Amino acid sequence: MIQFKNSFIALVLAFPLHVLASTTPLSVYSTNNPISWSPCGNGTYPRECGLFEVPLDYKNPKAGMATLAVARLNATKEPRLGTLFTNPGGPVTKRTLGASGVEWILSDDILLLNAGSGGQYDIVSWDPRGTGQTIPRVKCFDSGIEEKQFWNGSLRGQLLEVRTDFDNKTALNDFYSHINESDRALIRFGRQCNDASWDMLKYIGTASTVRDMVALHDALEGKKQINYWGVSYGTILGSYFVNMFPNRVGRVILDGVVDPWVWATENALNTAPLALSSTDAAFDGFAKLCAEAGPSKCAIAQNGSTVDSIRSWVFNLIEMAFNYTSAHGLSEFSSGQLRASVFAVLYEPINWSSSAQSLADFHAALSNATSTSKLAQRDFHWPAKRDNGNTSDPATDYSYQAITCADAVDMPTTTTRDGFEAVVSLTKNVTRMFGPHSWFQGGLYCHHWPSRAVERFRGPFNHKLANKIIVIGNLADPITPYVSAKRVADALGNSAALIKQNGYGHTSLFMHSDCTVNATVKYFLDGVAPSEFLECETDQNVF
Image 1 (cartoon, rainbow, N blue to C red):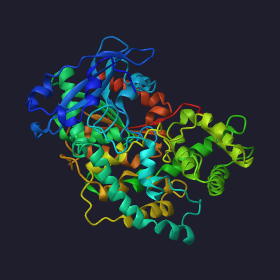
Image 2: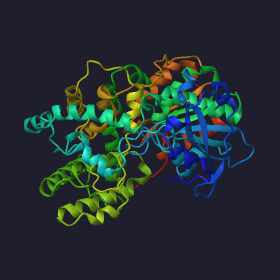
Image 3: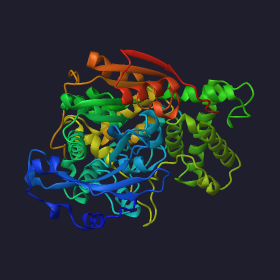
């Protein structure tokens, strides 16, 4: 946990949230609630952390107060131009939904954003409702052992362990045989999370988080126009913001875009097919560059490797992991974990060389039937384990599911069978390699989730904005396809400029492009956006 030099954090964490209820008028907290900043983190550039109170329900002050954990990196160059807010996305890998904004500020990754904005802004982020150290926070279990006991072997409580030919009749019959027990487990799970979270799940959601950002900005800068750079789920926050407060829009970038219409107005099961529609293209990019680099630079390449041969190699590795699990029981290094880890690899091309080496090491261990204990020491993006086995293991973070379902439309006719069929359809029709990894997509939980947010925004998403924003999409992004960026930019018309970055990975930040960086720096420093459309090449060797 990040150590705040502020004793109030201990007070917040020690008491149930209802103790903090207050009837203080909303206006007081929207403008006159200063943050007491304290040094935090260990980076080369100093950071500061603090706490900020906002209403739980902006339409009902009697509901009480939420407490946001906030952090900032002060401008590294003069003259200072103001505050730039940012949201990093989230925890399924690193940047999908529900990630800690405080940890984003304290990480080295924030320096990429600092460089891309010119260094003359204080960069501020916070843990959105339901995440990190902010209260309310999503809590379903006290420990990994409690979580394991709750799921009690249910298929719903673990990564999906299936062969590469998941669509064969035997595999499908086995999968569908778990529908009834999964349905019962999801009902119990929703109640468990709501009770453990003190009945606060209804106060989590993107619309309220937008209002939190506006309140934070007004406390720091007054009622000026708001600057923002959102990545991944942060683009949902950004799309909501620019359309809820079009006259408050300053300099805004949406980078790695999630489709707000699908998110806000369609059945939550529809999010994954669109989100994963360019995942295979991202994998093919990894395979192509690996093959071109050859065995001297990419550990899983051979002389004469092709995209097809490397894809086949990874499929074979998944099959080997499945066979290992079948022989030895569920382990951290199962086919489900391997799929999740390869998926995470696709996010950051700057790490592809080391990730390929980890894949090669994993393959060698399985081939030799040796202990996998050495693999645990590799830095290989392994997600948090689902099979928690002792009291010291933390429980899984379910903020992704909670926020997805808080924003979702009501789903009165959706069934657990529909969710199972969505996973099968995704595997058959969208991505054979990564379809089973969608087993933990947030939408699969929403038909039995116990609440929706007290405020849900449904658009429209085509307002005329006070200033032009920039929308950025990668050629092959594993989780936010370029088509979503184009749709958002097209809807905003003259209020948006679109940058297409011809690279791989999730968002523009992790495969460098001088063209893109020059455009974003000019935008933040001079207020000049591309006229309508800009196509940028990348210039980073990842192997």
